[in-house]
Image 1 (cartoon, protein in one colour):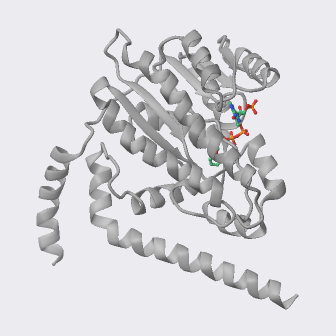
Image 2: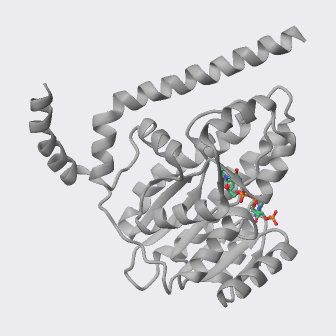
Length: 319
Ligand SMILES: NC(=O)c1ccc[n+]([C@@H]2O[C@H](COP(=O)([O-])OP(=O)(O)OC[C@H]3O[C@@H](n4cnc5c(N)ncnc54)[C@H](OP(=O)(O)O)[C@@H]3O)[C@@H](O)[C@H]2O)c1
């Protein structure tokens, strides 16, 4: 059994080497134009610092001009680079289009803006549900739709990137994230279909799936997060914005479609690979060989989470 598996393995690797699609790609950052939505805070700001220090020209888009000015100042202080800033709400397509047209052709578009208000759907107002879908999902459509025409007509033949910041709550539903998870799962569908539409234009799509991250947004979220959301989300740990920005930038540069950020993220990426594009035949071989094992690990996660939910309700009923 083991012997026949070992004999078959080279054939599997060879087969995967030929069939993985899209083909591997490298997307340079140095001397290129990186445009980051939600770039005035948290992950977006950390990404802006790292892209600027790697020699990219950087622009940031967000709503508050004050926060944008502060971000611009901090990047100038840390890397000596002057970034451009654009104040617009991603929900306003015309405002986004004006900003993107003023910015000019983008090489790496990072669609990072996002809002998260965790609450059980039964208690959450529909306005708040719409708010998350509008900013996280429709806002991403607005940004991509506005930027894509100029990205496609760029004169140099270098590969370009559209990167979407999703969340691990965009790979698996988590208690208290009914609306947020829906908005972030939507980004994956957007990205999978979009990649097929833009591959011929040498545009490469990445989706980044971070766990909880220490950011100003997370600090706000924590004030209202249901206890059960805290318990379940704790299974994937907490990261720093700089660490996530590094993982995201490395993933973008290597053109990876799915970009996990920590160990649990790698497990989730393999367990939820589905029919997603895969450029690396090494990663493809892990997905193929360990599919069953990772499904088992996924089932253990669900066992643990449903156990926590049961215990929590039992404790609540006692009091
Ligand atoms: N922090 C986490 O635990 C975590 C985990 C997984 C995924 N994520 C995702 O990572 C991304 C960044 O999160 P973060 O924690 O860095 O958030 P953050 O610190 O709150 O920063 C959010 C950024 O988005 C901008 N923004 C918000 N609404 C906007 C709108 N309508 N139009 C334009 N810009 C808007 C904000 O600026 P203005 O308010 O001035 O507009 C700010 O620059 C989000 O997509 C989030 O869902 C975060």
